[in-house]
Length: 74
Image 1 (cartoon, rainbow, N blue to C red):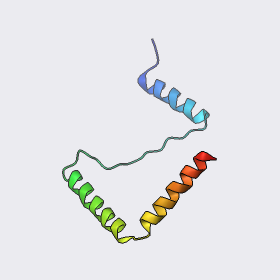
Image 2 (cartoon, helix red, strand yellow; image 1 turned 135 degrees about the horizontal axis):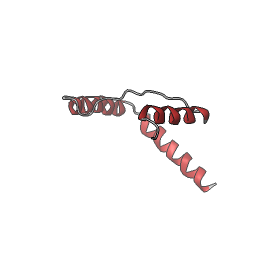
Image 3 (cartoon, rainbow, N blue to C red; image 1 turned 90 degrees about the vertical axis):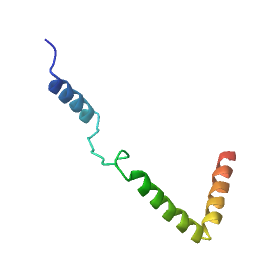
Image 4 (cartoon, rainbow, N blue to C red; image 1 turned 120 degrees about the vertical axis):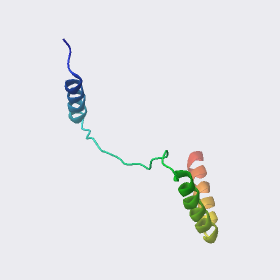
């Protein structure tokens, strides 16, 4: 009989650890939750408002793009 699920998982995790990796748990917002879309819109509006108030932002972004494009030509 083959390995149990628990044994297969342990073997796989041990192999990953031997390869120099470690497990990390990441919590992310639940997009299925009621109100998620409204919260996204609220936060997006705040960011857009802050961007409009930052008069140097467009100049900075343009300069960054010019720098990136000039690096590609080099």
